[in-house]
Length: 186
Image 1 (cartoon, one colour):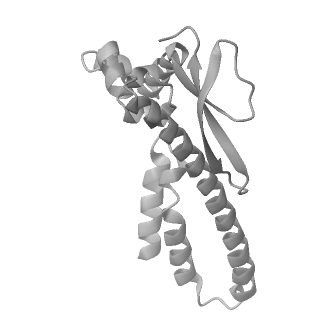
Image 2 (cartoon, rainbow, N blue to C red; image 1 turned 90 degrees about the vertical axis):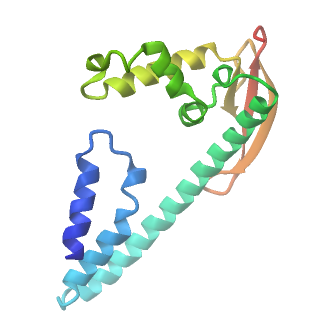
């Protein structure tokens, strides 16, 4: 029964048209447990289970390091963006990335601008809402007064660095995120 439950829950995630691996990760231990429980009586599996367990552990260790690096990078960017927001800069003038912008009202702004709720049939279909919203966020990014870049990229003309935050990447190397302000913007 646990195997059937794990498979049904995982299938529910894979059927959704915009799958993100973040939502599948919790199923990995459940599927491993369920498969191990169902196959524990087969004698030829003992050696292959050990090899598989080692490979799985290596994959999980790599994934954990990669995810930690990504989360540290996002935390550094969010802290910079939040510092700028605390100075009184409106959130729509800060290009804090897809998730930061969404958290700070970009989706609500898109709904108001696009009047999507009054014109629902125009947004029904494969990825239409996501494409329209991503386009809105890209336009917002282009008109923002504040942006962020990694510490290695050259600063574009018309922008100046105003702050930076440090973090450790997935290989535990020290990295930086820079906050940039548009020279001619307010």
